[in-house]
Length: 356
Image 1 (spheres, rainbow, N blue to C red):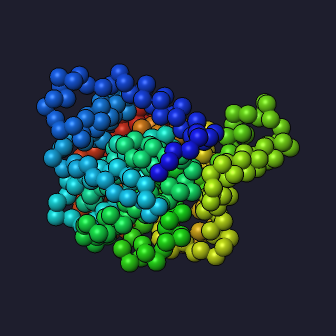
Image 2 (spheres, rainbow, N blue to C red):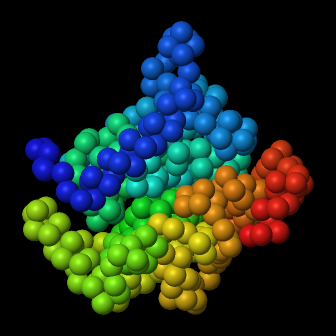
């Protein structure tokens, strides 16, 4: 597939990828140390160091490398996708598909989803197109990335037994999870999808851009001009990327077209999110107010994608409790609460809980 001239969104993606790479570089282990391990897990050794020294959460470290397998699959539109299979629960056929944020990569959705393994799940975490080790083609902020998620879903169906399935997504990954759960609900019903965990999602690319303007550009672009500018930006992108219309990258559009929510969802967001609009999550909750099993946790503060780091105990307690309610699995819930001390707060935890 021919790589097209880089556009605005892909310039932004490149900036974030390079920034994350620079920030992670000091955590990289020495080549001498890496020689002891299979090359496929070298990136995971580096992110384990980040989790230890920056997140300061040993619980999220993944060092049972014998349970980690690097696989490759195809998205539904033929893009090469790289993924990790993490299978610490060998006798379990419960799976979660973990989707990362824009500019991130599969290691982070894997670390962030680790609590699922404590509740009996195995994880498949993948790189979206243009990210990590997947094929380097332009991003579409979720519009075509849904085909990546569906390709991973197809691979899982073809290669593993699925007794039960969950979707977990962060930011762009949450957008994609919410989108596919609406648009492909019949397929997911057949695969026993039980629920979704949606962390700091946006509902549409248009609203995402409006929010970014409101946060970062309000001193430079008036409200009267912003919609016109964003429409021009989207039109220009649509023109450069044939057969693409970013206006279709909208969960709200699917709802307007009559797609009905089928799967219970746990929503996370922070009121002060500087990247994705928390109002989109509020609207999801309102639109779905008759959906049995929905739940949410809205924080007063958290850096984008970092609720798990800044509110580690309340975040993981909420997910574990939600999984327990969906699966009727109290035993594993009590075990992880005890193992991770999720109701025992030190000063840092207490401050986070008081301010949440």
